[in-house]
Length: 80
Image (tube, rainbow, N blue to C red; front, side):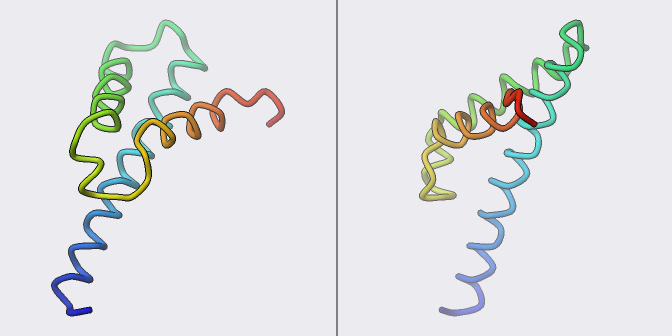
């Protein structure tokens, strides 16, 4: 694997990880403060659009719907 390809893969992974972190933050904020500011609800919506859209398919082999489901389970798991 050449350096360009490796750097490209690392960038793709970083984009997906940031989207996961953003989605988790938005869900946790909304969970802990249902009256939370509109900005977190907008962030949640934007993340959901990203995970449901075409770009996710170019960045990772993970299914966007599964990513969202896993994060929702993590955030809303009452056994934590």
